[in-house]
Length: 200
Image 1 (cartoon, rainbow, N blue to C red):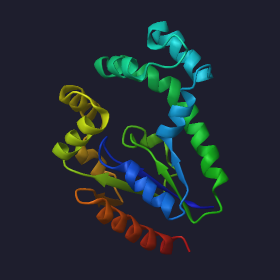
Image 2 (image 1 turned 90 degrees about the vertical axis):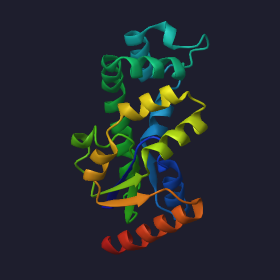
Image 3 (image 1 turned 30 degrees about the horizontal axis):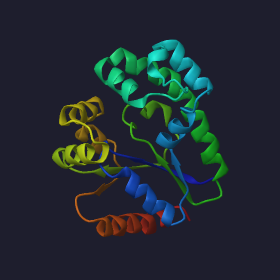
Image 4 (image 1 turned 180 degrees about the horizontal axis):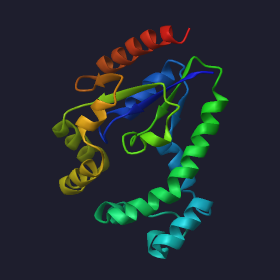
């Protein structure tokens, strides 16, 4: 059975780039955000539950989820975020476990999981926690630039997640992403070489 490495970090920290590096190295990546995106397809069971809970106004006329509207709601109302998580998390976790099992012949599998601190009790099977880290100002700048959000909304999204300190507390390894993409790739390669040795 392969080992399971959870890659986590705050929004804008660079988790996606780190996971691209792992993919380039031939390491399977199971991405919870990607699974959630696929489960947001019109007509899915999860979307029926979201519509029943939050109403038709969270959807476009063609049935697609209005992500921006739902995001505004859940970041403004903590109870709404809890309700959304209760709908999505069990289904996402079940699909993630299926994908992990399918890749069990590999030395290790990467689980890209933004909210590991918040959902640690659901992931006892994780063997190693790799935190992608950067300072909060860098994080804020990246979120604003990438998502074309206001600084206020970007800060609200950062604040809604666990703190940088909480993430670092659960880390077995840390990759600091505050330099060039080339440097980040070097750090991931170094981690891969070292961790692969523990899988033999």
